[in-house]
Length: 160
Image (cartoon, rainbow, N blue to C red; front, side, top):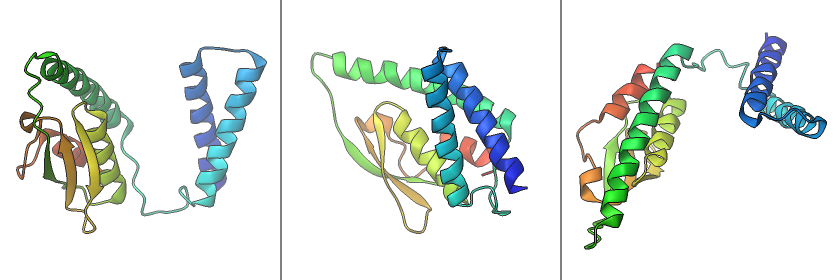
């Protein structure tokens, strides 16, 4: 089971490497193989494939979430550009706690990284109990306070 997981992980990573690089020179392919082998070795050392309790998101839900997140990143880019290009530069930074409804560490990490990927917001800290994430926002309009957000619900829907 672990060998199958490691081989599958290596194949997926190398395929992704080829798709993203778009180069097929020997040097690039060797670097890709070396990088993928390193990641597979590290993940086996962390025993990622051997934990039966670890949930991995469904591929279609993940792709749907990635598309939605890309759209949110684009919209946030436009909003942040408006704030920065305004001659008055109305930057009003704010720190707030975002509720995190995820039950697993992986879910909270995906949520925190999604917040950071969205322009104008940065995840500062995940609370010890895991129910909240401290977020820094460039402007108070970019914060959502104590109410739940669409991103939180979508990450919870991934099933991680």
